[in-house]
Image (tube, rainbow, N blue to C red):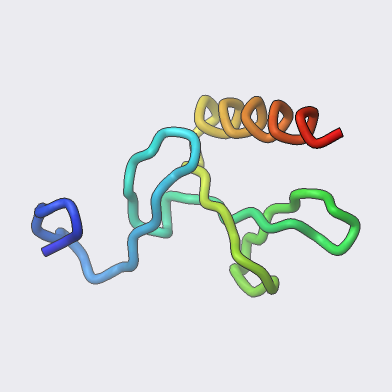
Length: 77
């Protein structure tokens, strides 16, 4: 059983998309990390160090995540 009380449909680990808020298997998501030059970069092999963020591999979700990160970055300047 998962945290939300639903039964699992696969043994694959699930992650939550920061854009949609949905939990999905890792295979349907893209991991992003902050690189050494403070840029957010995709981590397609899931091997880069650091705590990653996960975004659904859907164009609308990627666009929404990009808008969120732009808004967050502009508030830190």
